[in-house]
Image 1 (cartoon, rainbow, N blue to C red):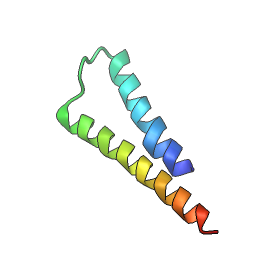
Image 2: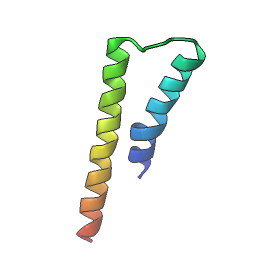
Image 3: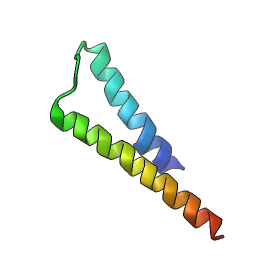
Image 4: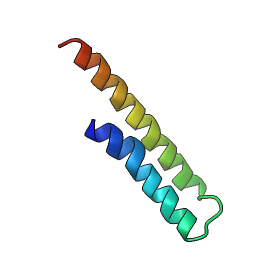
Length: 56
């Protein structure tokens, strides 16, 4: 669950909030891609946790 919350939720939220507070209207393409990859990775970790947890 730590990976889901940290990688998939808190880190992308923190980066987005820091950009908003600095007044950046839209993040650079590389940052947006990295944030999207982090959210997808968090979703993949969540899926793995649920699938492996169901097998126990």
